Image 1: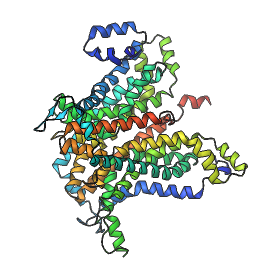
Image 2: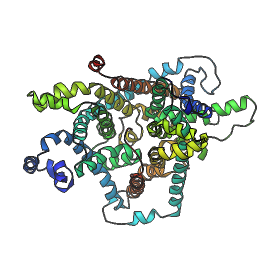
Image 3: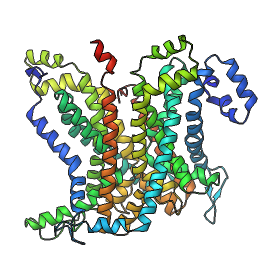
Image 4: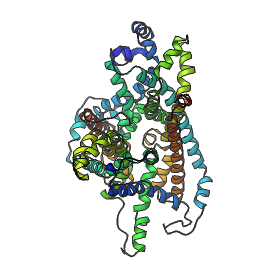
Length: 305
Length: 274
């Protein structure tokens, strides 16, 4: 089965091995219609899958005495992952991403409900208003917060102007700043799947519950939230994954010292130039992401996104 | 038109929503407003001025970065859409009965799911190991990696709405597979091709992380420029450049969504029938 669609052990060799590839084509009844898939598959095979495998390979190598890479098989990088110094950073990443996800869900739900139940014309406008920041320059959106939070920034100037504070507050380069940046950056990722999930719930169910004297709160807790669960989980995954591996936000809003997993990887790769250890950290992040995807696969609903 | 009164949205939800939308737009809006501030240092408003835009536009390095950004965005979006059309056709017209197909589908979408840092690190290692010099070409390749899945998603959504029997009808009338593709599928897909292309173009224009890892010296793009300006200390020119970038990407995305939204309307022939 695998060979017919171009992955698996046999499939990988086809571009080196033209006769075998022609033979496979003839054998397979579907092959002519599968042809258009190959450019995309080969491209991502070479420039996505192979690089990821190289990261795994690199994580088993060791750093040479003079900074290069020695290709001797070793697990030492993985043992180093357990260093308490780094454990704290993973924990920080997980906690920050977890809280970000939770806050996005709490803030995003009323917004998604309002949009999902809005009159048609408003709904289109509002969905476009959520989609635009979703696709807009993340770096600039993060920079906007530096502009607001820095010592002589907008917020401090404003607070000093109205006489609330005498000295500028240290707002930038704090966990709070990173946290605001993450919520700001990833809120649209939560709202979009929620809108789709809530829209699917027939409003007749809410009417029925109301006829049976359920309060608004009970309707949400017992009808809407359980039925929207696949969308809520999809939204949580979409926020959690980029948040746990975030780089721009902790780098710019957290300053150099408050590391998260994404900034730690960048630092090991580009600053310390310890590629094998950077690769081991990347594998850790990859495992975390794949685990999240696999564990939620059964409960999340992705269609319609 | 109106919905039954029974499920009015609670007012608290509506006010919260207004707050959320403000939260999403205010920071960027303020940035744009203050990019016109005459004052060089503080955020205190000292009058309207085009000064920072003038300085930005007379900077040669900036034009070079803009050229690089445009080249990368154009090449990567065209390649991604070209490869995406084929993949979307196969995935949509031959859905996952085959067990392997689900894996193909997952592989094709995975670049969108993993944190971008991973993609950047993996590509950097790859290019260094195969000894490919880092430069504009490596940046373009990196951008195709995330633009390709994006194009596939947009194109598949449109294909799902196109009647597969139109293809079959063409084949029954004696068209070759290529003729069917060229004269039936492509015209029907055109709005999605445009929309996917615009979206890929914008995402590429905006990308920072993958570019950061895969660009060599001399391959500076606009987001890399913004980043180095932020790092070397805030000059008001960053505000102007950021405002320009964000306005461009909002315009392109708005256009792309508009095209997508328009294509969602029924085709003229269907209107006549009703």
